[in-house]
Image 1 (cartoon, rainbow, N blue to C red):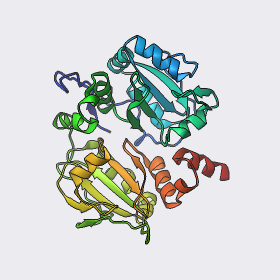
Image 2: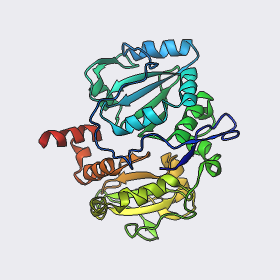
Image 3: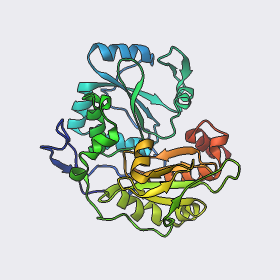
Image 4: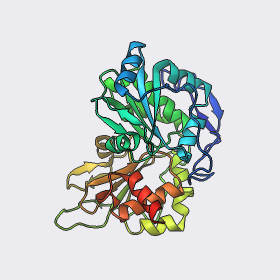
Amino acid sequence: MPRMVIHCLGAALFLGCTMAAAADFDPVLQGDRPLGEPLVHPDWFRLSFLDLREDLREAKATGKGLILYYGQDDCPYCRAHLVNNWERPDIVAYTRRHFEVVAIDVRGARLVTDFDGRELPEKAFAARHRIDFTPTLEFYRGDGRPVLRLAGYRPPYSFRAALEYVADGHDRRESLRDYLARAVTASSYGRDELNANELFAPPPYDLTRSTARPGRPLVVFFEQRRCHPCDVLHAGPLEDEAIRARLRRFDVIQLDMWADTPLVTPDGRRHTARRWADELGVDYAPTLVFFDGRGQEVLRLASVVGFWRLQGVLDYVLDEGYRRYPGFIQWREAQHRRR
């Protein structure tokens, strides 16, 4: 992870920002296997009875939005988020000023009343909302419809930008991708070119898949130049032979998310990398988008990812676990029960 990160964006996007020390917990360098000790949530989280209609009404009455924080008490990525983001005074102050935060345990049994009045245990509620990774944060304003979802751990400069994107109403005018693009030169550092890897197929990129004649699963690496998280992915997980062996069973493509590289999408449309990334809502580099042999998107990794999580996702796709389970978390729990 970087030794220094930009941690203040401000309304003018990166103007007047200061540099802060590197994050305290790195799930790539320090390991992303389940934790040995349970996590403790910040004491400023909303004390909720998990009636989300009431939580939303009270947040709206104070001029705030609502964040649903989906986590697990042994999740290293949750630890990274809680330590690196919600222990930073500036991010804590900004979050508390603009949002109420309600925690949902994706394996929990407490009853949650959804915005439509349906009552479900936390575990079933998380499955209904298709939560594949923890932490996942869903942002809401007054009408109960989600404004933004962040699935997985985002480092401080990226998370602070997402907070401001919602709090300042930028979502009404532009996508998070476009909002972040205006700050890309201020936040980027690293290699001046994409990382090469023999796993990546060369152009031309015809990714067409057919339901009549399914092919191999496909993973598309959306990356960008001067992207430190991309460098970390290549220097870490992609150097692991167990990961590489699994990736050899995929068609693997790397695209610059800002380039006009021509391609044919899995459903047969002529496109460019830039326009396809925009259509897919890719706003974080690297983002890995997984497709089955018929060209249907299975899931995506749009966050910091380490060995254990990436290996699990590769196994989930190769095993076609998405055909038998509501999501990745439920598939992974079933694998653990079998051991």
